[in-house]
Length: 388
Length: 244
Image (cartoon, rainbow over all chains, first blue to last red; front, top):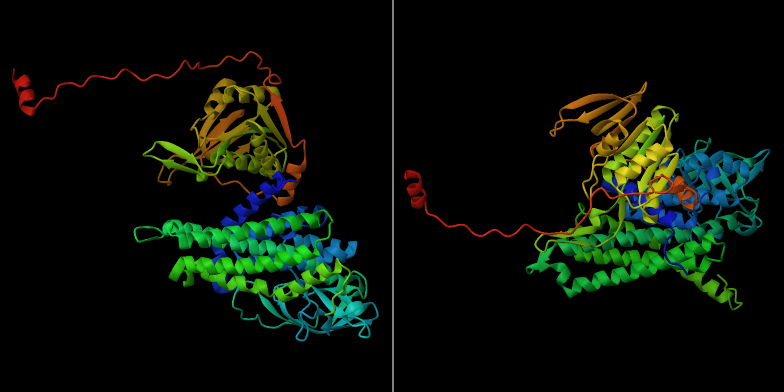
């Protein structure tokens, strides 16, 4: 039993933290205000391997596994939730779905550029009529000679406006529906007939662009099919299962940032002639935050360890996302309270943190869906298959 | 071209608190870091290798234990060709001099201008001992036709930069104002730490330092005897003494 990160991960965290603190955190406020993450920043992260943490070196990745990826997401979200969301959607669901089931040729074609930051990846599942119920998708793909024609719409796609490669789930066999009749395609954004809607105006994550995607008879060559025809739904669910672990790690970073800022503020701010840290009311809030964050950290890194060691992790991954998002929201709420009026100021990071934290309870499967996932895993252990 | 870079592991001062009244240093967080000016020397060494299109052997060395080995692994991840850990209890300058002779044909030795923790500056000592040329306080160093071209900031206000040249072999030490150290690719960090042979270990015996005698012998500590108070005199008394 060893709960310490091994030396390579400690060294990796040191490097990533330095990059985040020196190159990401200073521009986090500007990113939130302008809503733009410079492509140069992503390219810089790519140079250091940060855009390919869990993937092997042969595809241009870092070869650091899920644990390394969780470390990166924690540190990145500590600095900027917008950048972390772009990076998370890029690696965790975008490139990951290609890496899990894509053919060798497809991976060799796209992954080196994706891992080095030359190209950005997105993952398109949600549609106007399909969200939590992923089986309700309607985007149609029909075979025409050597290629498929994609026709339909996707909605709320993170990285949609900036992505160069988009992994899209489309129906290839309407008779079978999503389960058995859906296939994943890697679509290049420069393809004819593809267009994006204007970026959505959101409460938080202003720097992470989200938009509608239009597919108007977009031609996709057969080689760009990811996995087997008809098994796309399986690929997507597998990807989302892994994605939840790193999302938990990201929320961990957000919660940690709230605690760090609160501890600093409790030391700086004086009322009634003493630092506010001397008030038990503040101490209790800090202690609750620290206890929740530490429990989340244990869960996240154990789950990452399960993933890296090829053990079942679906239940734990759901827990990471569920607990992580709720703990992050609670922590940032307390942090705003500790900061008082400054917590509401748009010139202080707490206000941004508060807006950015809320989405974690919704995207990549709402927390309600996570509870269903956890419960169905629990019941499956005693032989009951829950019906949706 | 063979470049030797000397590194030192120091305690991160950000984890310390100094209580001046009590005259004590409290270590809140014991974390190790690369001495800042040594980091500049490492960057300069890597830059020279880049400028020569990789036609140089860069060797990083440090004196210490297994904690120091991690520092050398970081250097390996950044692209040095060899990392050597010296495990020996002897004056560092002497160990490095022996190492340079052991490796042979060293053209250039780079290190930090001073250690952040003890303030020691071994560069000049090594240059003297090996009979190398020496330039201290560099912010930039380039090699051309066996001549080291060094830029130094000689004016604290930062307006005056002077260029110096010396023939190789030479020792150049770097100021903290030199360009800061690059980041390693994450994948290289993973490889450097998983590779058991990333760091070579060398002992005093290997360096041929068998019969080491300490240069300075510590006999103990004592303070000078306390002096007695003199007489208190007024201005008038002084005037009287002068007038007489």
